[in-house]
Length: 153
Image (cartoon, rainbow, N blue to C red):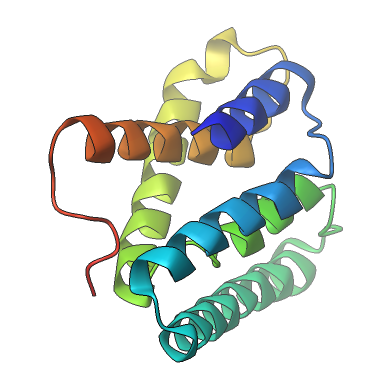
């Protein structure tokens, strides 16, 4: 929760996030995922599938940006912090949970951005920050509400 909160604060406030926050997030999420699943093979399988899925999404975004909008991709249409956040997140959950959380976080971020767009100084979406906020809420809800584990698969 802390790492997601720091990423959220830095991305919204400064539009930059300390680079070491993303490997730290990947390490903490991956360690949690591994300790709960308690099976290295299952952990590696889910993580590789999640990384492959993120890579496919990034490839499609890249192709759309280059071929359709004819704009630069990295740090223009899509931030490096967003890319690193996506990959850090891929270590954290079983694939079904990952897909649900990832798509929900994207929807949450889009809705939040459009509702706050007029009051924001910079008119670009702090995607990693909004997704970090979403995940911090999800972790809090999961811990304090006695809900089913995020790691059931």
